[in-house]
Length: 269
Image (cartoon, rainbow, N blue to C red; front, side, top):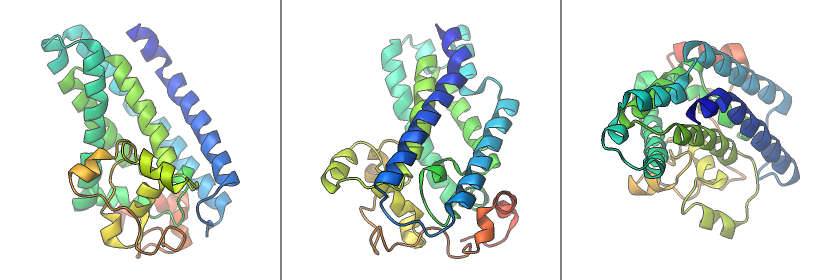
């Protein structure tokens, strides 16, 4: 079963990616949350270009990725869950939650530590926010993130299926919570008790620093509340708030060559 999952992981992830991407793009067309201020063609082309580049780079550097590490750990009985003979369903649930906490902690570190912020700020230089922003990350950040996930999977001895589930959830929720979609206020308030909603995460893309440094969660909303990084709404409201970073307002930062060059510029915020 593990071999079957591993052999089809790429197809599973790609399948979910295109299905969710299509649904979110359709939702954005039917019920947008706020008007887009930049060229959609330019943004989508370059955001999807860096997404394709990241996929290629990861496949070369990490041919087995986190799922491969999970398979090896299970065979060799490495990791906490394998050593303690924890029931696989329970180990899988805990793995998904702990990996989500790991991504939250990583996200906070990438904001607070200068060298990591240099990489992560590319994600924040998008001058609009929609489904494609959810996949706009610098290749070096993607490589670091994959390395961190692999280490956590190895330490935990995570079940293979749970790693696949987490990867699918991470990609799916990233597209969802970056979506430029309207969601009823009552439904939003109910959903954000458990998961990060588009309105919740959009605050994180505000040009105001104290708002940028809030709402770090991608999937579960618990961590922001638990660690007091939660901010309910942007001060200017969702329609009027300015997206991006104050020092990166030039449209050139929306194009792939300049996006990839961002870590090498001195401007921090």
